[in-house]
Length: 219
Image (tube, rainbow, N blue to C red; front, side, top):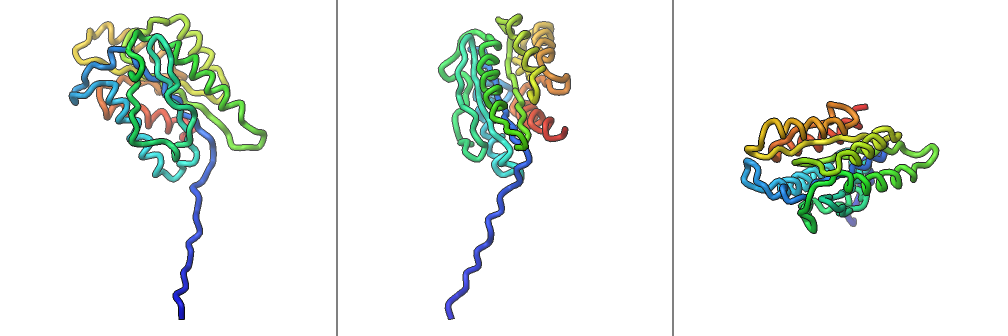
């Protein structure tokens, strides 16, 4: 008698919502500076993103996540259009300085992030899954376009289903007063104070990205 092969049904992970995380990442020259681990801040960002994507691919609600990456200096490059996490390369090079390296103008990154968010949210359908955008701004220095950045951040914070988070990546040995001013400025751009973090290394940055994403799920 031939063996009977029983096929197990393929069970898809639950899909309760559509969340787009948009990373708005500083790609200016200062990101070449080293962290306490001896690698540059730019390389730290790339490694943390790979870690995040890898972990979320294995998660129970992985079908709920998509991500986009916008890198900026005094220009803006859309490094990755909105992509489901299951389709993202979690061994990729996500160094935000690729093709950049100039001065820091957060407004340039926010302009592209705003377009991506609006397009994503416009695809919502009546009775369909709820959609939300979490925009994560990462910088390590002075913003050269503060007035325009503040205006854009105010607009984004008042958009339905958009949350703005931000972190300040500290530089080893930097002036404390200057660092505090920059950090307070980034905090002022966020939807809530709890969505801001000061980071110094890989572990801090990883926690910031995870906490920003989970802040939506906990609501």
